[in-house]
Image (cartoon, rainbow, N blue to C red; front, side, top):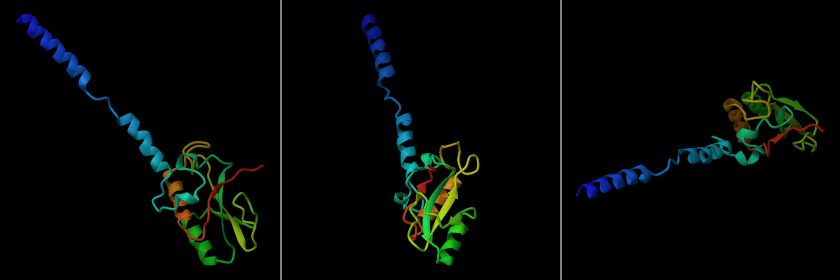
Amino acid sequence: MRTCLLLAMCLSGCVTGNSAPPSTAPDAAPAADATIERTCPTGHEEKLQFTLGTACQNDGSVEFCISDGDAALQARVTAIASTIVFSTNGGRAGCHSPGQFLSTYKTAFPGQCDAQHGAATKETWADLCAIAALPEVAQIVPTFFE
C-alpha cells in the first residue's frame, strides 16, 4: 500500500512538473513587433520602401516627390515636418518629370533614429506615415549617395 501511495505521489509530481505548457510569450513578441514595424496608423505603408526598424538604413534621409506648383501641398508637407527640404534634383525618388520637387526628410541619429542606421523614432515614423497618407505622394524611398 505504501509503495502504491509512494508511486502515485512520484508520478503525480512528475506529471505536474512536466504537464505545464511551455511559455509562448517569447515567440509571440517578435510576430507582434514584425507587424507593428510594417504598420502605419494612417495606413498607406505600402508607399514606404522600408519598415520602422530599417527606416534609418540610408545615407541620412528619405525622399519623395511632390508637385512644385502646389503651394498648398508643400504647406501640408512642411506642416508634418518643418525640416523637409525641397529641390529640383531627381534623387532616388525619381522626381525627373518637369514640375516635380524632390522632397528630403532627414533621418539622423539621435534626433530621428534610435540608433545609427537603425530604427526610426516613434515620432519620425508617425511623420513618415503621415506623409505616405498624402494622396499626392506615390512612394518614400531611402537615400543612397553613389
